[in-house]
Image 1 (cartoon, helix red, strand yellow):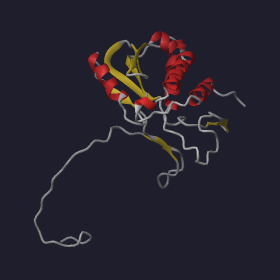
Image 2 (cartoon, rainbow, N blue to C red; image 1 turned 90 degrees about the vertical axis):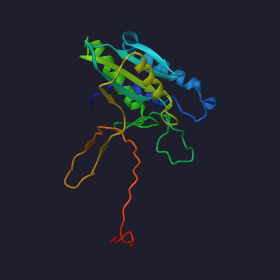
Image 3 (spheres, helix red, strand yellow; image 1 turned 90 degrees about the horizontal axis):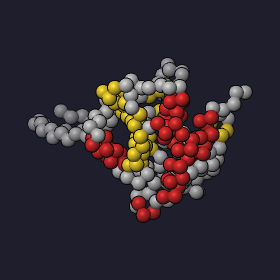
Image 4 (cartoon, rainbow, N blue to C red; image 1 turned 180 degrees about the vertical axis):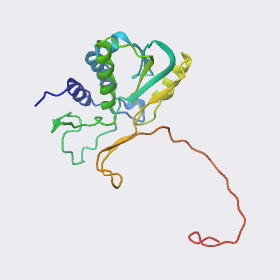
Length: 217
């Protein structure tokens, strides 16, 4: 059996830091978020040595990876916080244990969204080690309060706008790998969203004979 990829242990370490976001900032365990940022710096030294890092609000991060061109900049997003743990829930594994069982990492944040943080940083770390330079600027945007209010995201947008950055492409969480989702498809299917939901208000008026909604005239 091949040994696990080193990024697995990095993800496990991140999961074991309980960065639970709270609606009231006064209730936030700031020490946990400080510990997570310290862990990221230790795990991905090239990322934090080569990319210019900016703190967004208290614990968010914006990292700039210059490319050969500033045109068509790319933003890769993820978030560092997780939702609270219900201690009465029947957990198969400790929610902040980061257990590795049968090829999977268990714990709060593995999917939402520390897995993305670890994957993005590991990819950049390895590319930097290979001397790779992206064709366009890449920005890593990691929020710290996505689960409760999302204040970091608007602040990151303003920080980019202040630098004159208009992203050409933004990649965020939201999709899934679905199993048995559609008839006739017997393989896992990656669901990719290409836009964000928005809202619109419409006022419609019509004239006619009244009737039941199930059988309108």
